[in-house]
Amino acid sequence: MATTLAELAINSQDKLKQGFINELITDSYILNMMPFDDCLSANGTSDLVYAYKRVETGASAAFRSLNEEPKASEVKIKRVTTKPGILSSKWEMDRVAKTAAEDLYELKVAESKNAIIRKFNATLIAGDTATEEKGFDGLAKALKDSSTEFTSAVDLTALDKPTALAFATEMDTLLASLTRDPDVLAVSPHMATVMNAICRYIGMESLTMDDAGKRVQHWDGIRIEKLRDGALATNDIYAICFGLEEFHGITLTGDSGINVALPDWSAPGAVKSGDSEFVCGCALKKTKAAGVLHPKAATSAQG
Image 1 (cartoon, helix red, strand yellow):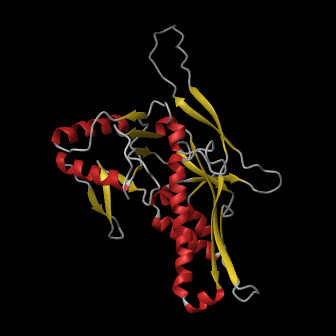
Image 2: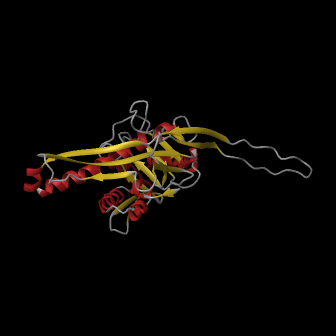
Image 3: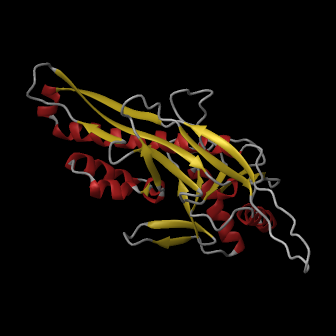
């Protein structure tokens, strides 16, 4: 069953959890937009394995003559199994410090949330259980050697109009390879700056205001989401279509996939701890529901 984190917050009976989830989706457009299949259970002997079929090549159709058998088309499907990771952020604080500096306590709680967002975004893109066994596999691994993986031939170190037009053509190729217009382009802050400059060269409107009065960057009407604080450490551009039959998250049933624990300051012990956890993973049901444009040269992203 598909659900969103906003729906999980509404249905949760835990006010603390509600507030935490609402802050997650307020600060992360991807977590706000991404549907989750909340079908996994941590009860009993469940090993949290999520199995699904990924459509790599869809079916085809053709006309036929009277009294002629139609030709069968083959759908290329890859069977995939994945496991969500238990993403945790724990903090500690002396009870004296809590009394003396209430703002420090609030800061630790807020940073726990920010850490969850950063790590989720980073793993959503570059997660690889071969190198981080406790995490989950991300888009980079799913799109490796696929029909929607492209590498740019354009050097963006020195921009001019011909360069900008050449890059725009490559972006058109990336977007045309997908099953529909993507919901978001996930990029590093540095790449977002470059794309904004390219938009100015080619006369494309790139900035609008959302309902909250915040500036939102777009590429040809598609939202650009900057994955900050090193969450995306390359200048790749990931185009993503969200949907339960496209690209979506996976988590536990109900609201059990997110937990927040705050310390009991009245209990014995000088140093208290709190933590937040998010049981999360992702699934790419169709190869053409996501794509990536790699830069011509591998450079470290800034921001």
